Image (tube, rainbow, N blue to C red):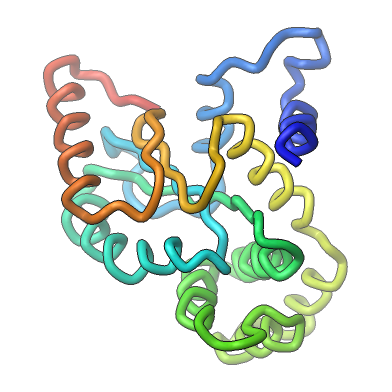
Length: 211
């Protein structure tokens, strides 16, 4: 499976058409170019999460650690946070990933992201019917959302990001890249805090913002 995902990731980058290997900095430039983001573009530290909405540890990070990171670092302009898909638990994970991207088309990515994690503990939380129901609850335009989800509009995006995570060495969820350095698992806030403070010191001494 990892080999297949890696091939998908390779296909995303035009450099490979010239027979050139993908460089790590090219991957992170792609991951932080656009997409769902919280925080200032001028933040000196970048944190990229690869996550699956069915993953209990991902949900734990959302419940316990992300709110603390948001308050101390994201809202204060020190960290910019990106969410990327690592949908490894089958179709429900893939369809949930597509659904949140459809919500993002209506500028409600984070609201839907939170709804998915809040609902993940219940049985059959990610059926097509439930996903469309969440959209109604969040007052999204139902017809546009349903058409987006039924068409598979964002399937390649979800598959591609999952492939990139595998290419970067991820083997489980969640996995994070803090200024390009891997951090595995739903670590407690104190671990993120220590690593972020280290990066802030490096940036302060060098005067350079890392991607």
